[in-house]
Amino acid sequence: MKFEEWEPHYKNILDFFGFDRTGDEDAAVLARSLTDKDDIAVLKDAVCGKKVTVCGNAPSLPEDMRLGRRIGRAGKVAGTGNGAEAGTGDAGNAPSPSGDEVIFAADAAADRLFSKGIRPDIVSTDLDGCEDSFLEMNRAGTIMVVHAHGDNMPLLKSWIPRFEGPLVLTTQSRPIERVYNFGGFTDGDRAVFAADELGAAEITLAGFDLDDKDVVPMKHGKLMIARDLLALLDFKI
Image (tube, rainbow, N blue to C red):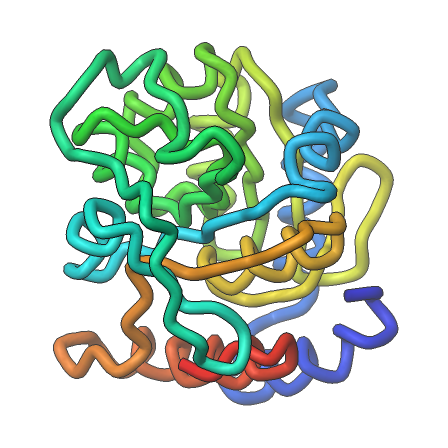
């Protein structure tokens, strides 16, 4: 999604939560100052023309992956027929569940997959769920798509300089040099928007639960917005 299309949605989010746009803009500048990396070409090559599965952190994630259970556009439920068996192989070198399925994990979902022997190809993260395993994955080739916003500047300072592998920076405000905006708000829906913008041939979802009632009001609001944003890409969940 181009920024001109995204900006009205972004303004609504700012108004809904009372967020400060200046903070997001400052975070983008900070993130860029912390690294010289810009692996957008690597990210595009990993996604363009590929079948991409975006993994959320819902409790159903392990079972969805084991069974090859996916949600496609318009709410279509699909089984890939080649689900990954948890707990097998070397996590550091483990391939995606299928040779042609790119795994794009949302934040803490990456660590859950990695602990079960699946190293995601790409991770979308604002670093809230970042663990040392992210550094290990990144060194092994996992592309880190790190999101900068007004509330995570200390995390940006702590983690960005430590990533040795491929790295792409994103913002939810106006993009600047080496900091991109593909659309989306939470780690999960940002991954979907990125895959769509970068030309994925097919996008499916695993481990998504936008009806989770056991969350704080702020998180509930974010899940509501994620649902509305995903509907723009014809994902009805």
